[in-house]
Length: 408
Image (cartoon, rainbow, N blue to C red; front, side, top):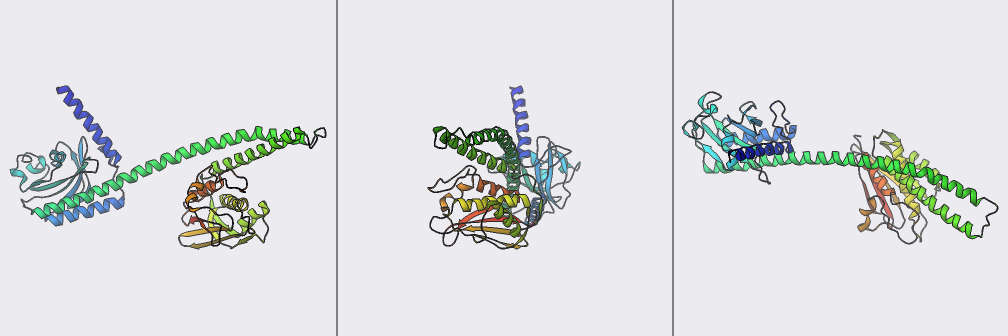
């Protein structure tokens, strides 16, 4: 039984230190991972308020690990560290009860403590509130104390408890921030691996597919193959399927390259759109472009405009001539560009879905596509620290808004 109890205590200590690390509070003696500056400042203000509320000169937020007690917020004293064995709060904090001792030198729980006897301090009045999280974990205490005996009223005790809950909220904020940072890092690494895999696969498949299409074209040009023969029809189908697959592989390769290191520079929206329009063979009477200078990666901006203009052409309305207007606004926050067409439009219920990779609406009369165009555009926006949103163009069609923050 004695050994079992020792093993249990060891397990609890390891669990406590792991939990503290989850909150960004490293219990190692020579390394303290403190909350960020904003949280630290807020903690100090709460400790100060606690001391003034109780009329005590000193206050601290104690974090208690398996071996140590250290302060991450203090008022009236310099933040310090001591062994858990010497700590006054470590004796009472796991009870989850508020502890108020008017004169610690007369209380059996604390009379022989080195912070009371004079070895480390001469604490007399002492009050502490456990910091209990939603999960029931108690990382430490909010503690106020004085070198003189003192009584406090019940309402002061209640307010001290309220302040302790505010301290817990700040620690939870630190916890959630760490979790988000970790998740973001893992997601970024996963996306990088996925993009690398997609790029390699697309590249490896493109070479044999291009070879197959080359042979198909050679056979199609062979005078011995009659144009109205079954062989010519089969070759036509193989060629069409192969070109569709090649187009999808190009889209996958383009999508896999987005989101890496961008090289922002001053880019003219009108020049970039004009170059893309010429590449796509879009007539001047179809496209209207407002000039705007913005900070963006030139290559990725061209890819974005190429995908959006290709979509406008593929999903044009059957009842009106295609018109596309590219415009933008800028201020000290950055720039936002708008690509508005008068095509078929996208239903509100589908707008979030079509931004996902390989999602197509497959409506009657739609042009060819891989379902990666808008996903690529959304990734380009995110790589720049911005976002892409879809809305309806007045009179019908789709307006794509893409933001580019100033601080790239």
